[in-house]
Image (cartoon, rainbow, N blue to C red; front, side):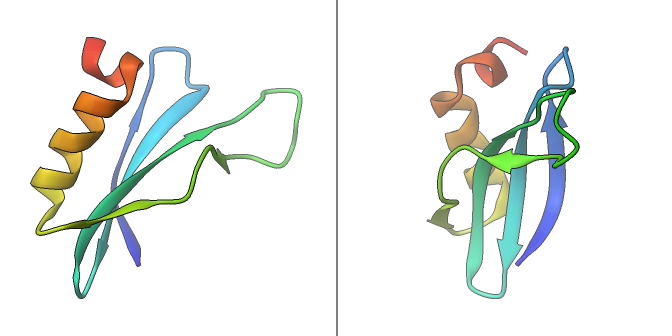
Length: 70
């Protein structure tokens, strides 16, 4: 699984990664806390099962509130 693209919100504290595998694509929303050196943390398991990255991104835009506003 590789990250094809990563879309950050305006604050830089949240992102959606578009994931690609040999079998298709998916996405996952992540967050980071500036005071925590851990970096990005997934908010849920990746949502997979899309035919391609464009379909995964469209589903993320429908599902993630801040992404739909961008």
